[in-house]
Image 1 (tube, rainbow, N blue to C red):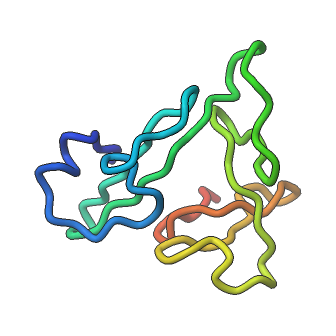
Image 2: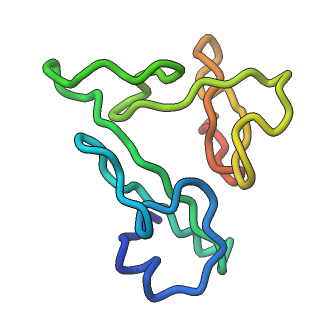
Amino acid sequence: MRGSQEDIASTCAVVHGHNCQKSSCPEGFWCEDFLIPARPGEAWVRCAQSCLEPDSPPCPSGEVCSLISCERLCSPEQTGACGEGFHCIQVQEDGPWLCKPEWYRPRE
């Protein structure tokens, strides 16, 4: 379930990631937030950059386009590299390792 900034503002929650409600995202990015019913009291937030359109700017260094937005690359050997509340996971069998919220699991 995807929330909105208004949802986070009205929720007392531990925020994992860049709290873009308190500190805005750079130009060209949007504040992406996830509120998961199974994890009340927690919110996962990040500044996201679109890579969906052919004229989208390239992803920043250390990131790769994954579906519609740039995602942070990681290595499973680097424990804690993704930050609190996130883990390093391979979304597709032959794909890159990405930082995703700790609750995220790819579909099988």
